[in-house]
Length: 113
Length: 115
Image (cartoon, rainbow over all chains, first blue to last red; front, side, top):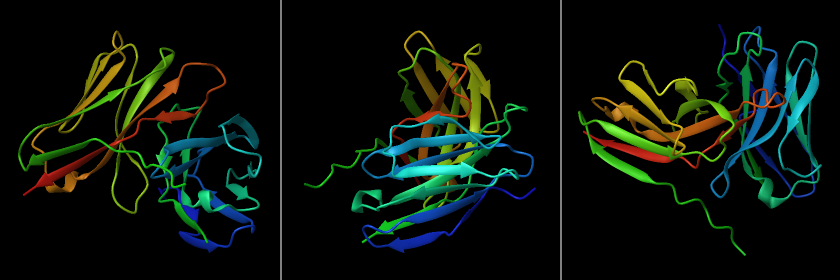
């Protein structure tokens, strides 16, 4: 079974731009969560999607948004990028029905310059 | 000004020793706890989990202990190997009905195993 796939792996953007990150969950998993990892704040929950609906949201500004498609693939978008948005963005998938643990992808390393 | 980074606890052991990594959690409502291992350049990898109705669970070379009274979790790694060198995170999940998959992570502990 393929694991969680995140694309792209690395990204460099300029302040003020926007960015879209993609996550393909493990086949059969319908729950996708996003986390931001920085040296200063550690791993912080961004949001979670299940069945194309946002079920939970962390304490991040409205510049951070996401969505989930009918095939459970998810995207997150960050608009008006700031230097502080530089981070490793991690996606995790799980099966709510089977109550599995969260499996993480390798992340997308975003650098804002 | 510059942001201050987290000062992660570090644990340095010799190959073959047993390692114990500790974690304090804050949410009394948490009912599910997980340990993750994160190697450089990779996402967190599941090691072992435990539910709040248990106080101990064993896996291959790893044991997790849960003390709900003092809200403390520990991960014991037996016969630690150089390949165990990584950052270890504990994570907790709230029992609340709307929490679904949201995990709250601890700050992490850096484990270094010397050959």
